Length: 46
Image (cartoon, one colour):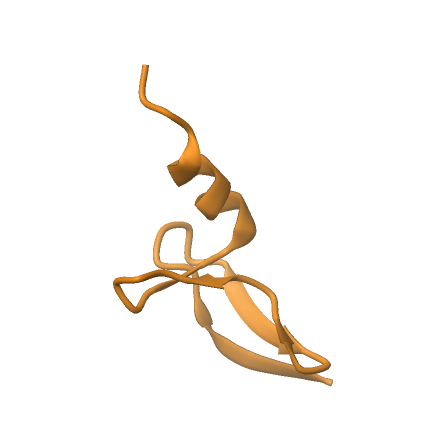
């Protein structure tokens, strides 16, 4: 079962809860991000 949760705050990709598991992350700032955007934020700035 797929339940719509919201959109990624950066890329606006639709995020879902799939069989009880959220397909993204919650930030400390109470935002939701897809896994791809979360990885982009973790890269150190050069």
